[in-house]
Image (cartoon, rainbow, N blue to C red; front, side):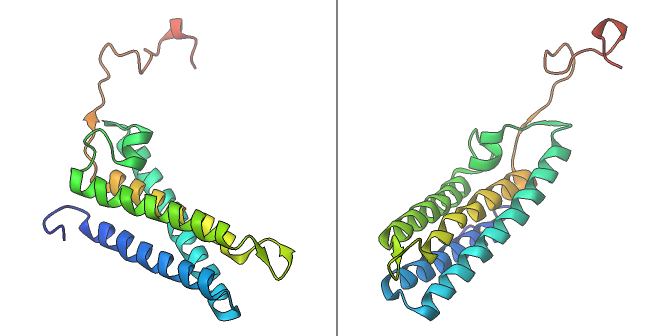
Length: 166
């Protein structure tokens, strides 16, 4: 698919997990029976957990890189501003979009459960955290950012007695 592109394993993982999430969510929404509802919840929570871990790992890595690179939030989490090759950005952002649409569509498809308010399909709303986290992790590990400039920059105030900083 993307041979020779750095981080292609993360891209493939994102696509595979997106397919698993959408398939489990659609099966849970269509069948709406006990084993499928449970599978849908477990897959959604698994995707959410992967997303949280990837998000924190990517954020920590980006903070370390921000000492030398000028990293924006949009570039990091949505792979814009030439942070990633267009093929990577397209696939990763499409996977995130599919996760969001799949989560919302299946959650609203069954708004009640056995006459009581709420639905196990609502857990799917948590799953797009996976796409966001994997985007951030890809950006932090492999993204291209402009170098941070420190000389005569308004970004970093000069520290001295006149700045009032300790």
